[in-house]
Length: 516
Ligand SMILES: *[C@@H]1O[C@H](CO)[C@@H](O)[C@H](O)[C@H]1NC(C)=O
Ligand SMILES: *[C@@H]1O[C@H](CO)[C@@H](O)[C@H](O)[C@H]1NC(C)=O
Ligand SMILES: *[C@@H]1O[C@H](CO)[C@@H](O)[C@H](O)[C@H]1NC(C)=O
Ligand SMILES: *[C@@H]1O[C@H](CO)[C@@H](O)[C@H](O)[C@H]1NC(C)=O
Ligand SMILES: *[C@@H]1O[C@H](CO)[C@@H](O)[C@H](O)[C@H]1NC(C)=O
Image 1 (cartoon, rainbow, N blue to C red):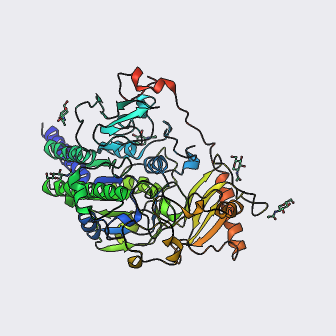
Image 2 (cartoon, protein in one colour):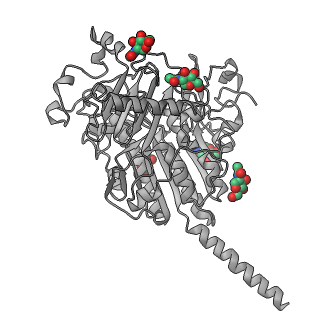
Image 3 (cartoon, rainbow, N blue to C red):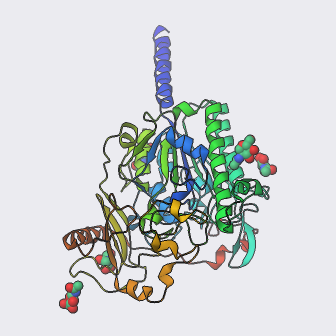
């Protein structure tokens, strides 16, 4: 009897210890914005006000040498897999199908004992139900599955037919949200996740991935959010500014809820964009960076991002250490005290870089190699990587771009007086206007077709104004050799084709899995 009692006491002490160990792990909140331009956050440009994001950022660590991928799916795939696209087969464009044999960061965090929730845009495949977030490590989901849709009806057309609803939970389609604006809807859902978690008084910490639809096209926003920007004449810029306003308010609401629920002190809160802004019709601005969403210029990939929350020890600091979206996987799983078994990561654990200010474990980023992209020009150097192929790599301060580099303009934010903008060679853009590119000028195209390699010192020249490729042939060759080495580790890229069976009209007029 005595020994039995002692055993019970011993076991309960043991289980208490396990519980308190679990409690010491932080809640992980990851907020991803969509197509959010570099210039369009308050601390980079003052045309659009983002008081909540600014305040949050200044309470934590601002990441100012932080990279994502140039478009939606690639960034999301790297966030979820911790792997470069050349290692998942997703290196060509927007192939929304994260292979099922690759564990997601949510799988690993869940395996470590967290409750895990996904809210917002998925865009990593849904042909079979197993591709949806609730089968990829998330206990619950409230999401749309594809890349864009109407902000109020939550519908999207299929090859000109429809539109059809794309919004669901783990239980099935969510029909009753028509007329609720996306930014408010996802924020409210995220706050409900927090409330339910707090009310359940579970021992487990929480992982919430909130991937806002905002501020991707279509440019739709309730009037009240646009009103502060009446003075902006460009209609697209004005709507976009309103959309950013709603996003900022949503993040403010979410933060307030975390504080009200006493969760903030035990939270690591990450904010990031998925890629650069769409400054050709999307209303965004990446000023003073070069290029746009979809390109390998800095404007496509250099990201707004920061880390806040009560579990971050440093505050009010700017980190200039090199960081990449693939780094979140090991960083988050490390914070969750999870296990990286079964993973083949390209990311590095950056927690001590962020939290303690140690130097980054990363010196290289393979931005991408896309061998399926139509080639441009002839190989510029023999016996190494073929520069007609679209690729980019960063090594230390240097970045090399090859192939069809995409739109390469510096486009100022519409409605901001040019004299007030910082940036070199202002005359270069004073002729261009919003929505067009001076590369369309006669002659410019021909010149561009010849050229397919660029080298920049990004630390000294973040806006990519001074191409060093002719001056530094040895460095160009060394970096091309690195691309060959990376290319040798690549798996073949796959291409996702449109499937007639995916027609939502065949599935109750809702978007969803079609191969079950
Ligand atoms: C939609 O329905 C669900 C239950 O089916 C409910 O929880 C939710 O509040 C409803 N949403 C709206 C906007 O009415
Ligand atoms: C933020 O909270 C306020 C007050 O509850 C609400 O009116 C507003 O719609 C919320 N905004 C978003 C984007 O969720
Ligand atoms: C990894 O280890 C965990 C135990 O920590 C185990 O539950 C899981 O099955 C393992 N996963 C793989 C892919 O080996
Ligand atoms: C590469 O080699 C080919 C064939 O020998 C030659 O014609 C071409 O000029 C060389 N290109 C460069 C950039 O050296
Ligand atoms: C990259 O590797 C593939 C084989 O995986 C090869 O076909 C291709 O030529 C290589 N590309 C370059 C630019 O080296």
